[in-house]
Image (cartoon, rainbow over all chains, first blue to last red; front, side, top):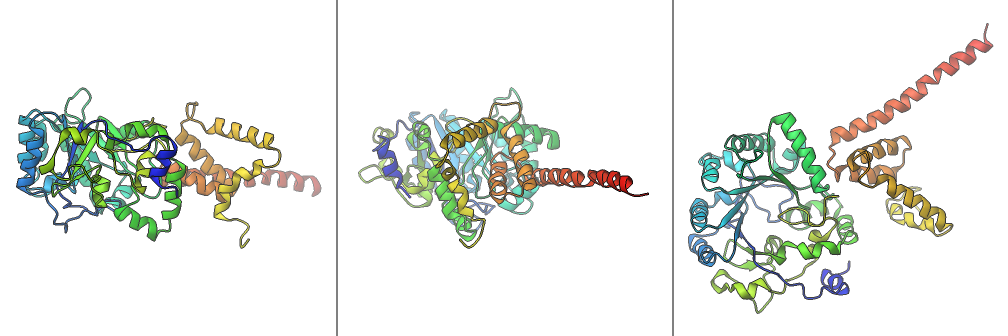
Length: 321
Length: 111
């Protein structure tokens, strides 16, 4: 396999750098009420990693200037962090746009049923995982019962105005493939999901984003056990698309781990690949100017973001089909 | 060669362009034109048709390729299985309808 850094070098992209920090993606912890088969962080109910209050206050300190317009909250299930609501409410008071990623089923957990109304009150943008519009695929990847719980959570959000046409309560879905294959074109799949979810379940959403499964964490375990690893990596390499480079999420996003350390993305965080030496490494050392034009650390799984139409936490990068 | 069909052989398809590359290029241009997006059928619909035909011609390379392509275009196993049933129904029906020829010939040569 050609190392990713050498691949970029051959195209004149040596020393890939960030262009800004438009989004601070904060991982509030690896605890989750689910243990999905594709999870790159191997999150689950048994994980103990959680962002503590002093670190949450550091997040607020670096965002209170208003220089970073979007806070993207992820996990695990970010809602399980005991300081989640304090963080969201404070960020919104500061005028920061809050985007929260939800596995949906957590909204039905005891003590969390009020969260849809909390989201509505604070105008939180939601990105909700739903890998398919049928039970079999969803339950196979996310655990028995996950599909119908997800539908119930979506119904509650829809009833509050989330995902409805013309509503500014943004509800987007996140698709990832249920196996060792690439995601479909984003627009045709969005059309398919919109039709099927409306017809079968009267559920509505704004946009659907597609995400390629990264060959790390539990998904890598699956690829190896099923003898798909070599062919998957080969396909990632063969599908390398230079048109994705300008929109790579690491060029406009900075990732914060539960312990306050800084990373180029959540995938680097999963593999404990911190920012390059010489850069601020923690929230305490935060220096927006230095981070906004930082050189980006490259690794082999970066092929996952540059394959085909490209992949990011905001969906595909280089066109739908 | 341990088997007539080797999984890796699909990746060697380009070798068929070594002799008479003009014919191979013509074929590939046609093939890519047929399967390209932007036609009257969606790429997803074309992939399901290809999957059904792959079973009819019983090509393991095509079955492998179009199972992946179908999944990568958002199809599910219910739809893909139904496509194979369509292929099987047409194949079965084609065999059965030829029974009329058998009846015709039998009628001609029997008293």
